[in-house]
Structures are given as C-alpha cells and as structure tokens.
Amino acid sequence: MQNLSPRIEKLWQLAGHCRCLGDVGTDHGFVPVRMVENGLVECAIASDINKGPLERARVHVDEAGLADKIQLRLGSGMTVYKPGECDVFIVAGMGGLLIADILQASRDVAESAGRLILQPNTCIPDLRKYLWDNGFTILDEDTLAEKEHTYIFLTVKYTGEIRTSYSQLDLEMGDILQGKPDGKIYYKALHTKTTRKLAGLKKAANVNQEEIRAAEKLIEALEEHL
Image (cartoon, rainbow, N blue to C red; front, side, top):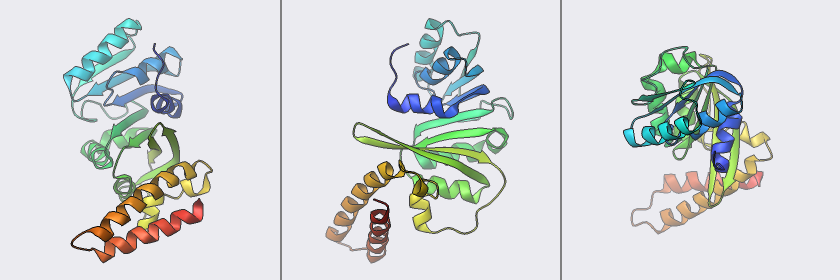
C-alpha cells in the first residue's frame, strides 16, 4: 500500500488491537486495510454514505486481497452496523456536530463499542459537550500537526457517567490535553485561531462584547499553557 498521511497513520495506531474495526466514512479504505495487513484486527467493516468513496475503498481492498476480511457497506453513519458487531469504531475527518449526530442516531451501536476514536475537524467544544452530556467518557486526547493543519483525536468510551460541571474553557481546552506536553501543539493553533477571531470581532459593525470577553478569556488561558 502507498504511504499514508500522518493523520491516517495516527488513526490506525490509536485504534490499536481489536477484534473487529468499524470505519465510519472510510473514504479510500486505507485504515482498515492497513490494520488487517498488520494483524491488528481479525476483520473490519468499512462504511460510507456515498457510493464513490466506497468504490475507491473496494479497489484498495481487492488490491490487497482482503475482500474476505473487510466488508464494505453503503449507508449513513453507524446505521449500517449492529450493536456489538465492532469493538472499536473510527469516526474521523468530519465536523464535530456531525460526529455527535452520528453517535446520537445509533446510540445502541455507539454504546456497545469498547472504544470510539473520534477526529473532529471543527466544532470540537460542541462534540465534547455532547459526549459529557450523554455519558461518553473521554479516555484520552491526542494532537498532530500536519502541514498547515493541527488535528485533535479523542479516544472515547460510553460509561453512562454524565458530567454535570464544566466551563466553556473546559469545552474549548479539554482536561486531558492540559496535562500533556503535546497539548501545546493544539493550544498554539487554537491561540492563533482565537486571536484572529478576536481581531475580527473588534472590527465588526455590530460588536458582540460577550463574544469578545469569551475570546479574551480563552486567549489568556491558552497563554498560561504555552
């Protein structure tokens, strides 16, 4: 198989050893192919909502000679999986709100998984809020800088424990990253993004003082960790 991007490599490394992998939004199918080839999983199910990506995945699965170990399913999110069918799921490369919608639409499937590897591209605070409000525990958080992008990866498991106390800063920064050296990678990128946002807010015709104060507070908190 061709060399994979650092982001894709990170996904299959975080998924680790498991019995059956579920790759939601598989695109090219690179992750399940790599994991089966490396003996990390016995089997995998790769799904996508669109036919085009699934056909690209089929090509790579066939080229690797793994059609007997990797199933391909067309459908939305986790709706094409059964509870307990996969012990690890990867849901990556999409917005945080969409990931939350996918989990909510198939709660029985999501709750049955041993681990969920989530990689949101946007709306990370919204995803954290959904997880904390709905009994999903964030076991770990990792970051990765690749070219101009900085990615965050959440390792999650449903425990039924609902978090009742957290601040907006907790949602923005997370708990785990604050205690990890590589958290600074993400915090540096978030600092740059928030600084630009603040500048835009101050120039806006209708100045939103509440948003300005929130951005300033986040920048101050980030600077304490940088």
